[in-house]
Length: 206
Figure (cartoon, helix red, strand yellow):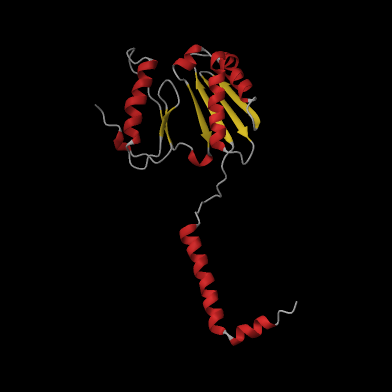
């Protein structure tokens, strides 16, 4: 194919060539500055879902046998699961479910939540009645920037009352702070995970 006519045509029509060049340049700058999101690192949706379960005063062996294993067995039955990994330690079970890349993670999260409801009869009763587990999408970009621990100084602050205080009072106050994206309680003793910047004036003493 003979393309020698392109240079000749361009020389004869310089105004059109300049206008076309400037138009393409303007569109590129607009797309870069206004339309394209800019990340320090390219964002890829994580295929991981975490299940965090707390059981105070339980040994690692009890956590593994009574909580982690039943959850693992149920998660392995879910469609699209690549593997299930877990960590059992004193008072805490952490199960990670990885799905296939590209899978709809909203549907995957709902599947894990449904799986936990199915596994509930195999778990200790207090885990279900006290809602001592959380199903969380694992996203490296949404890691908490601050973790707080609550502890009762007297016998009046038993685990249930401390959890209620965390849910109803602390979470409400921290959620109202500027630049706080979300607040979540992930333990019966009131540990808080805050997924955004935190400013110190939100918890005034009463």
